[in-house]
Amino acid sequence: MRKHLLCSFIALIACMSFSACSSTALTNRSQLMLLNSQEEIALGEQSAKQVLQQSKVSNNQKQAQMIQRVGQRIADVAERPDFVWEFYLLEDEQVNAFCLPGGKVFVYTGLMPLVASDDELAVVLSHEIAHTILRHGAERMSMQTLQQIGGGLLGVIIGSAAPGYSNLFNQAYSIGSNVGVMLPFSRSHELEADKAGILLMQKAGYNPKAAISFWQKMSKNGEKNPSDFLSTHPNDSKRIAEIEKLLAQQEQKK
Ligand SMILES: [Zn+2]
Image (cartoon, rainbow, N blue to C red; front, top):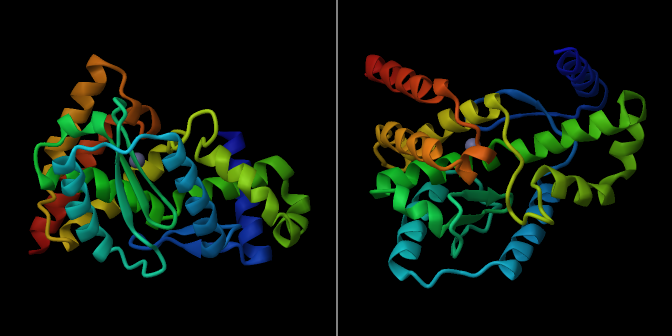
């Protein structure tokens, strides 16, 4: 808790001193941000190349087309014209999916048995795309930078540390020994990606109620075999309740 408070304090000082803050898209939360969008995209594109070099693209055309169809519809409403969106189905039995800054989206074949419809696939793709649109990876890199160097050297790092970002990016996204698999997101990032993901999928014309059936299936699957997805996107018993609350609030407003 103390560490958390210290981080928040340093983040606050950083925000005040160096204009190192930005606001999240869709949820409008202020976040610490030490790298700009272009740097983030360059790192994402670099990692996407690495992922493709080290993985096998699946030749299941039907599933690949489904990912392309649903992913593109969500990308169309994500308001990131600076992204070059591409969607890949990778041959891997892990239950997982992720999106890198720049717009490269990867789904493992192991996840596909858990999605019964375009709506359910839209849940997971919009959640992953939301993490990226909300710049959660970059935010985590910024926090790590602060934790590693302390507040005093901030001016130095902001001025000159751009080359060092590559290492930090790899840490934040766990690229290297474990290509493409992210470290666990925090609970607050998870809930925020759920909320923004629901907004995105609705905007793209998908049924947000699929979020409830999808997450129920995910948590059941996680009980049986500790799922890779849940290790990077920690499931919270509150997740489904929060989604139900959001949908109920939307119903009331109608
Ligand atoms: Zn997540």
